[in-house]
Amino acid sequence: MSEILTANLARAGTMAGRSLRISRRNTDALITSLMLPVMLMLIFVYFFGGAIDTGVPHSSYVTYVVPGVLLLCAGFGSASTAVAVSEDMKSGIIDRFRSLDIGGATVLAGHVAASTARNLISTTVVLGVALLIGFRPTATPTGWLTALAVLVAYIVALSWLSAAIGLLAKTPEAAGGFTFLMSFLPYPSSAFVPVDSMPSWLHGFADHQPITPAIESLRALLLNQPAGNAPCIALTWAGGLLLVAIGLSGVLFRVRTR
Image (cartoon, rainbow, N blue to C red; front, side, top):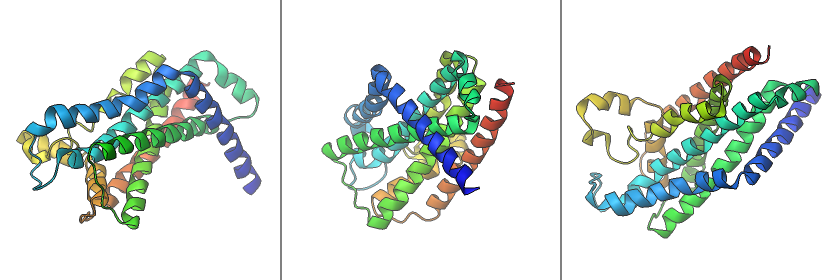
């Protein structure tokens, strides 16, 4: 059993390396995934920040908005996974992989691992720019580790969900369109404005969707504030999304490769 697991991990590592090399060659998409979250953060901070009241005394808007941008970054970055998986299915290379005894789970795990690596690089860039424009986190070492755990959990879950979308879509273009939902979810949440400032009919969705507890967790942990049960709720959401995405991708892969 351990030998099989080791072999599968080695194959997944090889597939992840392949996906990273493909990303490196696709310079336009790589630059877009790295710079778009940064541009959005700068737009919100410098264009809209002066007019937005977050309800937090003595707090600049950049302090409020950075946790939301980190989750937005995860959504943008994972969307490329759907396109990459769809391109693999369309090109026929999956048949070659199967002839080499490389299973679907291994191929998809490679895409997810590469997406996680890309997202962590993009998150680091966003956080670096945030520090330059005034973001000052005061997290404890435990807070940093917990925040990283929440962020990585969401990156992995969204990447697996994107892989499932890539299997569901018939073309890479359609896959890119389907992932719009993941990029949209941070907007009806507490990412950019407090939920209380939204119309009352939107409160229920904004308070109980998966992105809001993740943002609240990151905001509290990075600023060394009481987080309550938000991290537990966030990790529960991420775990549920991950289980659903893995199960769905397995079913869809078998259907697409019959």
